[in-house]
Length: 549
Image 1 (spheres, rainbow, N blue to C red):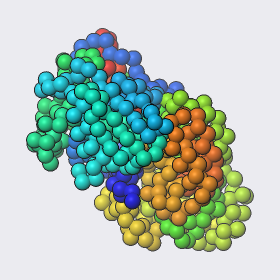
Image 2 (cartoon, rainbow, N blue to C red):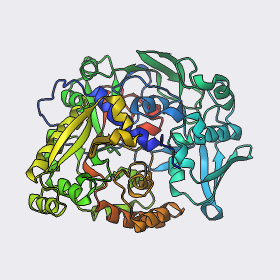
Image 3 (cartoon, helix red, strand yellow):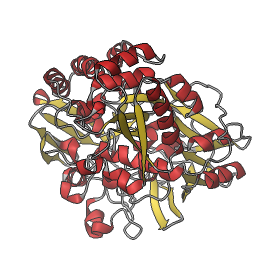
Image 4 (cartoon, one colour):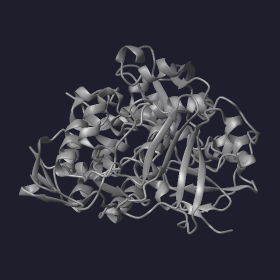
């Protein structure tokens, strides 16, 4: 049975709730202006100068925890990723390289994954990193009793054992292509065993702090105000150029925008669109647009009713003017996305060219076709029907997008009634069938923080998938997705996934409205942070520094 607190569930619910909290104010620049189109970039030039202190804004407010197994939203990942490292290292282009593990090699037909640990790595307190720490960390992450958000990644793992002073071996009951990718995210986090056991439930909290190996060391957490970390000068992979970083909790758009304009906040990720528009012509700092795995979409919430009919979802998809949505709702900070798995998810994979060819062959649906849409509505017997779409209360982006969908639906003979929910009941939709009762669609923003198209697709396209709320079932899709996962060959995995995607994409399991850009703001004189969404799972501040200008 799948763990209902699967990391992807946390991502969808947490990001949508964060949007509801962070976009309540319209802010300056919300009158409809569009940010000038510019090329997406994965990173910014590495900093060259030392900087004494940086103050970083967290638009989604205060983290609930910085324990890496409990990081479930943007604020938490932005902070924790600089302190607790992963076994494999996620790069800005979403490729995977060695991290705390110098290698992660498959053997025995893909049923054994051997991790060789980097020698000479030390925790902040000077204790050496050992295989025992890695075994403890992985077992802690895999154990549902710890509350870990990442237990599902270990679905095929039967044992985690020390096989040498600096070697750990994972045994599996079946090959799992996605497991290695997962180790480049919080699934592969490593903490000091002795410290974590001593702190118990306080680990990762205001009172317990952290003990990890990353480029920054935890110093303090002032509830309601800030978290501070300082450079780890003994870091195994280079010395950070910024000595101290203080994260300020700024969940209000107007407050964040004003602070960035005034230069009292030096940088921020996850800028709300209103703030990005207001800051787009700032002379104090620069906004960088990067590739992301985030997408704005809506999907069915019931096995019955018109929303459960793929013809109705396809009709809505055909009726929506997505280019207009990107311009008016996202203010130009988005792109047409052909399916719910964003290209960045596989762009760093060895089989990226194979994924790209199949993705490009999918219909773009970026030009409305009302004639075909009305035909499908009539075939489905949905003319004159009223459907309920749930959105998070107070979220400007989701509200505007839903209103646009509502208008498009009306043109093809369908009425959509919008139902807004506050953060707690909205989150419940992702955990409780009862909470979804009486609804047809939910519109939200979802993302993934590690590579791999197998991260999302099975949750929508297989019988027991966490988001398969419409009862979609296709034996061929299930077979192909299983074949894509049960291999260690990148090309075999890609070809099977692509075949499955071609089939399930025609059912519009999610109607993808747009892919969202990753937004980074840096004050003049600062550089080095990645611009892509890879910052969720990598020590992004390591290369942050001054420009000397």
